[in-house]
Image 1: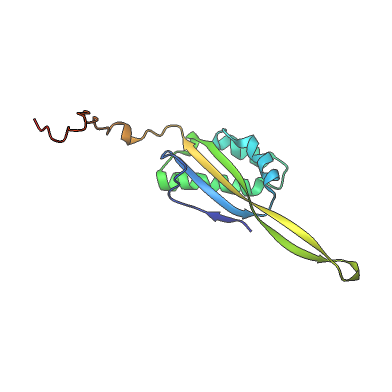
Image 2: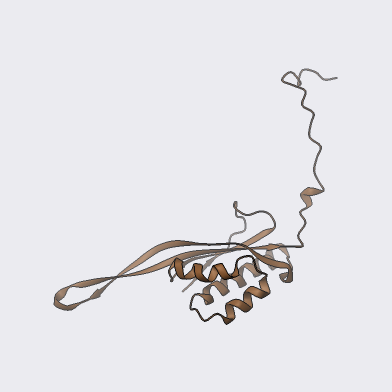
Length: 151
């Protein structure tokens, strides 16, 4: 089962990016990175086509995350899906699930099931921040006694 976390604000992304975070996905980070390297920097529609046609098991959770990030962009920011690109993608190792498998003569064998955390950030190419038009002029530097001079 895949847990998808949606945050409204990420301190690591800029204001024109929207992201989705999938945690504790049951696959190794190495196998997920093999897929992630193929979609980094591509457009949203092209990413969907690539993920639907690749024959790997890791494509399905990544496809769900891309859909979730696009839904966040459309709902939270009002971005157009046609102008979205995959700007940042990160795969980190998660916790390892450890299970015991019974073996002969009363022994046990340790089974390690790796998990990973995947973060996908989408960027809108047509987005223009309003901060550019609301810039104030900087105050003049009058030195260390500038606050005494009022005239």
